[in-house]
Image (cartoon, rainbow, N blue to C red; front, side, top):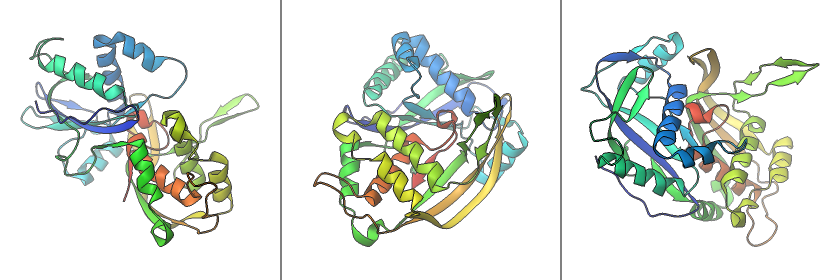
Length: 319
């Protein structure tokens, strides 16, 4: 098993790819984000119960995201299988992947230590399965952090470096950017009226759905010295004044099947244009509102966007 190691740091984000191989032939539901989320937490709970307790502490959102299991088949076939909930075959001769992001720096050295101990047989023995998804067991074949994922979904970054890269952007460079929504995405707009709960999900990446959620994610994971670089009120006012709007898009509605329900949403890409109004920031260390929005767009690569990003939904990246 090959593990590519990054330098440790308290304010880093990591996107890993786990390459898995099934122990035997079988089938699995095409969208398994819910199963992957549960299996990952169970693995942590079994081998590091104190960490599992910390992850469950309070009502805060999980400091990680999981993808659904990715099958080595054509994207069009994958989408059809998701829509129709056609269980797909598992072949021990094929490699399957899961994407995992870690949103707090201290999680990576802990994950690395557990993986190495597992690989060396110190936790269960080398021939024990790594994850159980439904009734199917998988061995861990490889962990990729950077460089070898040709699809471009792995990497790591220090939050301070992310800020500095955005700080260097000025002028027309800030005018537009495109977000790809690679897995089913939606925004939970449910509410309770007169004691009746109504489930509502927005199926378009409108700015006032997308960016406030990313602001909240930034506030949850950024260290104290960086957290105030993103100004919630400033961004909300900018969006309300239509400072950011959709210039182009290639979106289509989609749905997947969870264990107990069908979830609707969308996939595709969307290009946003930012008005140059309010470009100047206050203070030498501040970011302009357009720089802040670019920062949030880059953050989405690690945090995901919208509803159930910890269960395979809302995987996004900025072009």
